[in-house]
Image: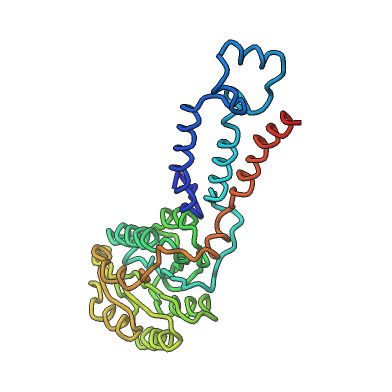
Length: 302
């Protein structure tokens, strides 16, 4: 990959070595004159060419035109591609929803930085899976539907802060319910609750259990630092919520257990069909350039 460009079919680059060998052989062989260059003195050969009696074969850089055409064809077959800004959101492909607690106990204290760092870290670790974002306090709000482009979420994560969410309180049950609605129709998905555990009650526990029955695992990341005068983090409540949801429990500072659960085996081996929808294949255009050197040879032969 170069910058944001990648190769969809890099195995075709294996032809580079044979092409390089042919180019070296062509350089050592010298200009082709239909075999006359092996039996005629160089001065006579040059004279015959100047009179137009020897027109077979190309001279100078033109003899490399077939190799240039093959190189262009090879690069085209390798499939250089750029990300598509109009790529469709694959909402039915193993999505992950991140529900971040921005109640005063988190947003007004050092826990806010923990929540932001943990959220951004998960987005990076989950490259390849669509990720969505929910923010909640007394109410919950959908910030982003699941998207495979993590850059969409970067601005939203940076904007987290005090006063972003209206009202007070913390209702994780509302966030779990909203996530369930956004993940409707999926055979499997994941939800990660990033919170200090405020507001976890029987309603939230029941919502987590119902999501697990639908194939949506609920994991938790505990924000360990709370605002001054706020209740201490509910470690037991967050762990119990993850147990009921069939997921993993970890802390925002050390989310390894949750990350291991979320990263699917073979996640980096992308389905070619899905990759084609996310990238614009420039290969056909590059392969078409191979026609230009060939057309030049045909014009000269005629």
